[in-house]
Length: 143
Image (cartoon, rainbow, N blue to C red; front, side, top):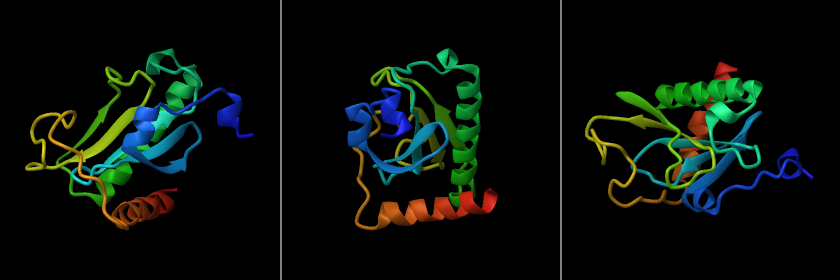
């Protein structure tokens, strides 16, 4: 049994339904939002019933910060982003998850927020895999 299952962690079905699984980091499950309009990663700490970043144990707070910065740097290295947006809203899905996305002037929601902006456009065959391979290469070179 994995440590995630032992700890009682369960991914919210709404997150699972709108994202693609990519990899596990020391604290977080890293997922790709299934919307090709935006380069967008989601970090979900594998902690049972985690809702707020500030309520995590101090070592988990630090790990989530480091993982968020790693995701932001990888996105910035692969995409010509005008701005890297980072958010942990949780208004719709209370399970703690951190959005990290690369924004560019003229994208489908610019300059407004991406949440609720139009309809998600799922990745086509091979597109998500290619994007994640690029991000993986950048991460391997950085570590």
